[in-house]
Length: 239
Image 1 (cartoon, rainbow, N blue to C red):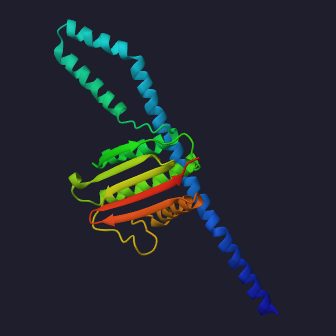
Image 2 (image 1 turned 60 degrees about the vertical axis):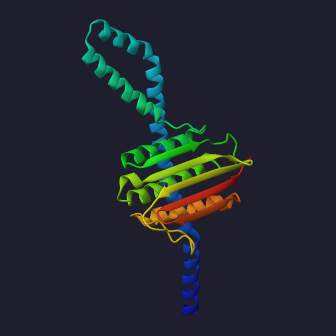
Image 3 (image 1 turned 90 degrees about the vertical axis):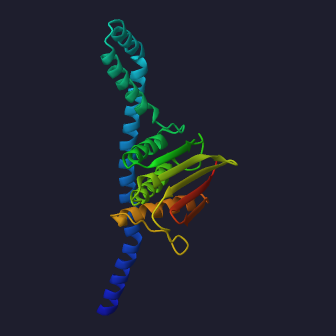
């Protein structure tokens, strides 16, 4: 009787573990993603504030430049204009998709790509109405772009690093495509794709969340790899 009781107790414990562990992992991953989204959101809000500030000060900038010109202080004028040009370049890098949460993730990742000398091509528009939530969209973008950046960083020659991002409406569906450079070829055909990043446990959960979000909405996900190139395509139903 004691053995039977212990066996039942162990079985109950095992069943509880199977039930609760995935949920604890999901909550941990969701907290991680939420912290990322909030941080990136604040970064882009700050960039927008800088843009509004620069526009507000436009007249003052012109007056200052004219003053240097009238005084014949051309070296100071050239230095001042160079500073303004650098400020405008930073503002120009902001990508606007029509969705502030997506902007937060996308612009934060683009700043990393510039830091790692990764060439980028971006065409991005997010429909105003979609089945997928903003938080879920950020999970998709964050994880896919993290993987693309990591793959590019493993490419030794900077001139061979690239990431192409395309988001838009395609036949009343939301279409997302991310193509990036990589070393070699990824084994995507057999089994689920695994992240090769450090801390693979958490990143692996991220990839699983991408798959689950697409499955949740009955969407389409395709991963393809050729020598030196990896691509992910996602189609999700519109609203």
